[in-house]
Image (cartoon, rainbow, N blue to C red):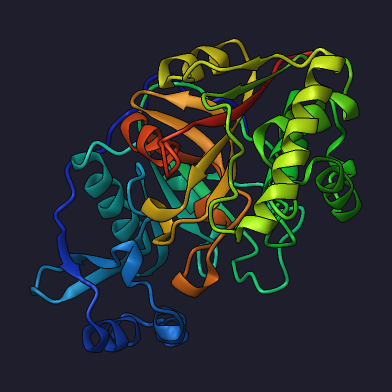
Length: 360
């Protein structure tokens, strides 16, 4: 993606109505506006966790002349257009205005029915399609993004983890591809599983083990682990006997970090420090809980790779197809600083784990 303009020109106000997504209205509206294939997609999954709503544009006669189904992950700074029907350009303009009123950083548009010319005219840029995704992941072949404020963000290649447990390895690989250290064509399942195997604490990747594995894979890349607890982590859900041998492996990872010169910073990594690292064109692999964005408390690695005013831009290697969440949501995802701060304080004692990767 080319750098975004420093100051975007705003459109004239758009008259629109925002209403909750209600099954019956949503089932008949697209057909009235000439898109009979759309209702099936709107009702195939339960989107209720992502605040689904309709943004409609009334015509001169009072009837709807355009509408868009809009969703978004909670505690983020974007809106996603699933489909726009009727006068598409009017519908999209109404969504952009709706996002501006909320002070959001971005609008995305899934490519199910989006016409590339309509997207370009509305100020959207194409997203690069995913290099890989899990077999059970549903999503459009194309997608678009429009940033609504200042700042420049470049896009890493999007790679969706192909297992439930390789998020840490994927974030490291994508970071190195974004930095130019790894060719994008080298991002494949063999690379994903190989790095995971070197970093895993069975099945998760804990911060020290991941940092050591990154150093082994790319010796010329500066690596720092940030972990503000000295106890073993990501083990509390396991029986005591299962915790014991994994804790031993985590102690071995700390020994290996010392042997290979990987610093383990015991201080709390602040959001200011994350922003500073990103300003130096470093990458931050950040461990967070999916409670806020997806509704279940599972530790998960994401890649922090850019900033815009008020939000950190992440790439999440996992999307929840059961809620209508797709790679378009997960790629170039702006998360407000306060939300990211809360998400990345992991229970039971609010520790923070991260790995920063500098430029070679």
